[in-house]
Amino acid sequence: MGWIAFGALAVLNLLVVIVWKPFLHSYATEKGKQLATKEDIDNVLSQVRAVTKETESIRADIQGAVWERQTAWAQKRDIYAALLKTVMELQSSFVKVYSASRPLNAYAAADLDQIFSECGQQSTQLRQHYALGLIFLSREACEAVNAYIEDSGSGATQPHERAANSIEKLEDLRNNLVRVARKDLGLDAAV
Image (cartoon, rainbow, N blue to C red):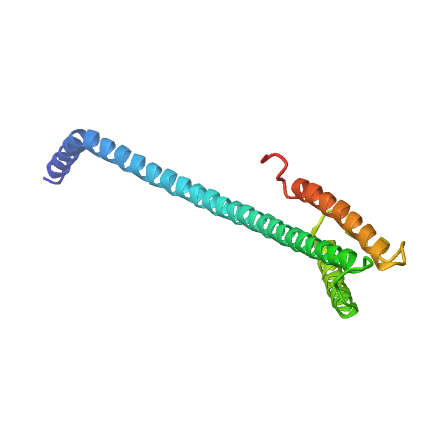
């Protein structure tokens, strides 16, 4: 009976394998596909995370560079505006000197002293703006302001003549600054 039971068990085992083999094979195949898909998805997700991280890093670098350019542009604009304002105020003061220093004028000597004091303060402001401009402005702008500063004390000795020369030099400086500022700030194309 041992051999009969063993034979029956072998036949039964063979029937189970024959019946279940297709099901087991398809089950194992499907499980393998799912495992491979999961691994593929994990790999793709890992790559997407790496690309996202790199993209964020590049975006931060670009935003930082844009912020620096915008800040530098704003500084340039502010310095050009301050220089032009000071040039115009200084020119206006020299027009007063020119008028006050003419013979038979109604201005008293005290008024002329006050106007010269204003000119001195405005010249100091111009030098302060120029010093800051050395950091941010173009070489051409700095050279124009420096040429005026170096030349502002030379020339005529009479207040009337000195004022007339200064008015002309300040007009040239203003025109140069406007031209250079438009180019330096990228505003030439805007008009």
